[in-house]
Amino acid sequence: MGLSMAAARTWVERWERQQQRYAVDREERFTVIADVVEHGTAGRARPLLLDLGCGPGSLAARLAARLPHAEIVAVDMDPLLLELGRTHHANAARYVDTVIGADGWTDALGLRRPLDAAVSTTALHYLPEPVLQRTYHALATLLRPGGVLVNGDHFPPDAAPCAAITAHVGHRHAERTGGHAHEDWRSWWTAASQDPELADLFTEREQRLRAYDGGGGDQLSVERHARLLRGAGFSQVVPVWRFGDSAVLVAVRGDL
Image 1: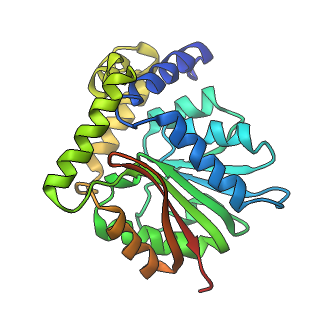
Image 2: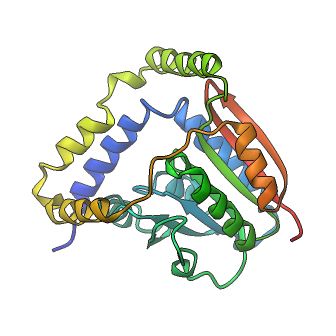
């Protein structure tokens, strides 16, 4: 028995609200990412986009609304979030179940032409630096020359005192704009685990997480990301939006 549309809508809507606690000016970040992709794919009849760590399809759905002629491939390793996306945002993307950065992960994408853009939001910071470096190299080979990687995420400064300041600024901004009025990450997962419709997906998710040994993510600064990206073949790297330690970082793939 598949997941009902009603249940998917309920849990995706709650996901959207709880994520406002963690991504400063989340809707503006989504809009900026879409602005960059729109600019980078101008003149292309059917741009090909890859959404990394798509979760329940939040970014893919917004990109599909902005760029209705785009082909979007959305990738995640979480079976529960993927099923929410497949059900609630079924027409936004083709959803792929794979582990970003693992051996052979790009083969699972089923790409038949170069990417025009790769995007991500609040996902790549979970990757340890060596895995992130491999992922950037892989993306450079998948993107066409001039294609863009657009990553909206947490990029704390390298210096601890400055990192504490930027985190505090983001936290206070979320309080002022009502983000902290919503349930948090742990509360969302606890409540979702009690929904009988999600029980089988939860079991599969727990089995995968026990088997997954991805290590802890590294909280890297914009500057450290830029060094990794340039080493992977991206000729230009620039942050186009920033508030606190939340930023949208754009990298342009050069000729390899």
